[in-house]
Image (cartoon, rainbow, N blue to C red; front, side):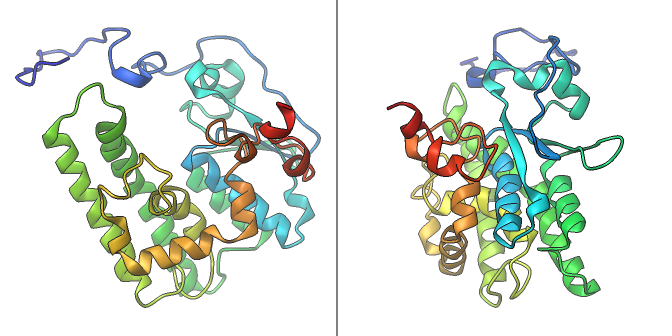
Length: 288
């Protein structure tokens, strides 16, 4: 692990337990590891997730829809503890064969519709309820351009920069420099776009903003890898202006704490089954 002169073998083999922080859950095969039926709450929309950036995308959108008065967007958010391998249960694999959060079941249809991959869930909900995705073809396409930009770019920020800067068992200068350069290039892409647009895809707040903010906005607010200073995020003025505006939205403040299991107890709502849970069931209330 510590040999920087490592030479790959002809055929890679898995050595269980190696791999640093996530070695207990990483494996080279798919499918379930254990039997477990997922819980089903009282609402048609059943979300199985964790309050990571990808999970926050969906809960922010659902809270934004509820803020508009879309009562059909009421949902149950069940906690999936990925560090404990909940995503490898038979029930979860039935919803998402890729064993990644978030995953959604829509019980308003018969049979229920499964939706997995965060970008697909955002698109599904925006189309289902008719909000946060423009109907005019050019504006819709621009929104989807940025939604898919996020889906392709965030792995470089998270699995690339975030992993080697924050999680890897050793600091590898080449890897950190490689992905820091890419992260800063992406910040520059966003900053240039936001120099002439209030929101990511134009003057309208859309699922593009909802997708991008939990990753890049959280980075701007100092909540991702503690890397804002290292990447000099404050120098991207247009981007920071946007990040602050989105962060101030009440629905964003609510959505970002759903299924959250870290940070201040008042900012953790492990499961959400009713709007009153934000007032009654955050961890600071439950731990009294």
